Length: 473
Image (cartoon, rainbow, N blue to C red; front, side):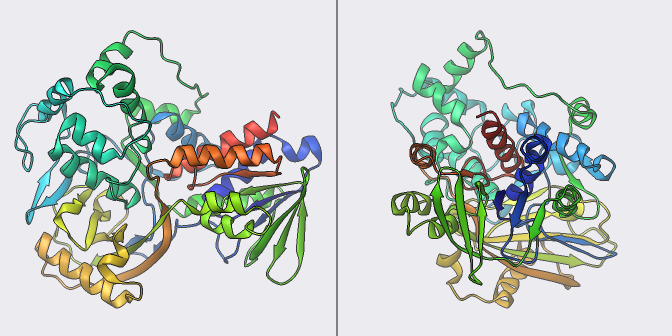
């Protein structure tokens, strides 16, 4: 029996790919999924009413790259093609993305033409950032923060007003701490290999590309042809994990909810025991851990303290989510995806998503305010109440967007330790973790957001690649 630890997107995807690789048919292997809560889907949760949908976690998915196309293949296979709502590049949610600086909302350039124009708060056209890269000397480093890298190559304004808020939006983190390899691994390698990004781009144009290939289904092909920018699922994004869970159940995967594991003990290279909080033990030949690395660290600490230490070194941040619904027919916002707030503004909020612009079937105005992240305790303390977060969010919204209407409905969530932070050295540490597991011949595989990417596409692709690697051993 193979055990999957955690019923979030990583665990569900692992079950899906184990089934797709016929692991149960080829070896008579039984699959068993253990989830500590009463819900499968992790941070993907949707509150649905007749008038609005509140997404309490992720809300949209990008279809780009091999990981994005892979997710579309999965959605098609699960029968969700007809439930997808997508946005093309000419949609306001694709074109209009803003930052809030000096009490003013500014639109970021969304076209090549915009790069050659002066756009506040930048003091010069962004094309000058490329010229700056050409003038800067090479700096040999093994890793660096994404902030330092961008400031060095493209200037402080780009680091402050473009990259820092982007990192807030992606992982609620501090660009001065996040590894450049998190988003700009290729550009960093250009600097290290060729002395600069522009030089690297030019030289790479004449080299053959060794990109991974993926057989595309009709849905993925359509997304490419129509140039989808982002998409979501009608009726709430949590439809995705709910359908995945049902797929696993239909294929005889035992799913045990409200089942907390307190310790993992490795007996030998083909036997592992999961000790539950009620004293019972689950024996398996292999375990796939999709739980956050800090949780796994506690489960294996007695037997493997060195591995536990490595796992616990990845920091996680807490994010406050405040969903707001205004039941008014008049538009309260300009059509856009939303706005982010650079950390140098010292604001209590990270940004705001205009859900009524990018999620279908919304009546009135729906907004989601993100708070805290890397600065959660610094801004709000460890015992902040949901009422206090609501108060702060509404105050900021009314001030920034000049909204005078009363909030009709709301939801407040505090997502404790919800996003891992890929700080400088993260990828080397993950290599050391996997080397330890391999050298000790431990029957465990690691999937999920703690290791190979924090986005929905990353988590799903992580499960796919890990399962395929294990199957071919």
